[in-house]
Amino acid sequence: MTGVMDKQASFQPETEKSAQFYNEDCEDQLKLGRFMIKKLNIPKGAHVLDIGCGPGTLTVEIADDVGPTGNVIGIDLGEERIKIALQTHKDPTLNTYRPNVSFIVGDAHNLSHFPDNHFDYVVANTVIHYLDLRKALKEAFRVLKPGGTFAASSVSGDHTCPPFAIKKEVQSRGYYRAHIAPTMDLFDFPTQSGLEALFLDSGFQCASFDLIHSTLVRKDPRAMINYVDASCSGTYIRSFPEAIQATAWADFEAEFEKFRTERGIELEYVGMTAYATKA
Image 1: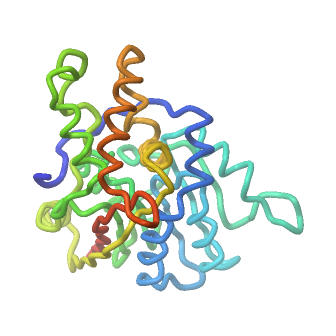
Image 2: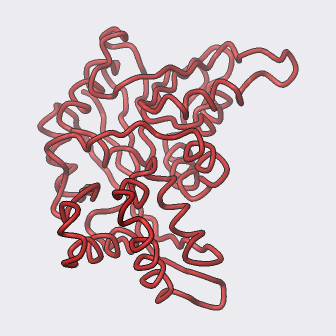
């Protein structure tokens, strides 16, 4: 991994099935997001924008933190994930939407429907590797109040992430090069130095970072691949051409099998959280 992407990763509309699978199995991403939110210690009454909110689980937890005098807006480019968020997160006593949380389909690169200096916090959990960060940070900086905080989490680009190391190796094989580009749907996870430089270029100050060592465990290769694919909005293996899907599944499963332990398929990776302040 070389740093932070200079262009937006191509976005493919996610299927309803993939979005639902992610909603049912996103605990690993939530752990990273909860670490980030706990460190922020967001106060009551704060106004928060949650970029890439997915099915809204973390968004609603933030809404609980800010209380009835605060407000949280979750945006995501994935329409299916926003549908799940709208269907799932209603006030359990009133069977209506919570007054301090809302969800909309939205693009982090264009936050024009929000005014300048509006939010106390802009957060982005496990989504920044999809973004053109120069554009997204410019918009985040604009909508934050002076003294506001931008916080993000991601896989660390300074460390190897096994699922994507596997994908890069498999796609480099001659058979696949005849069908797809060797770098198709490979994310450029941010490095600490690359992200810090972008923060400074975007006008932010006081950047700080945490590294979180984590382990993914699933019962078998197929379960692990399904999890990774859903977490990537269906761009990990299901974006391969239909003609090579069967071969790709067999090759990926063989590679993931190399990580079997007594607990199942076990992959270690390093997550990163980053924080920066608008002066």
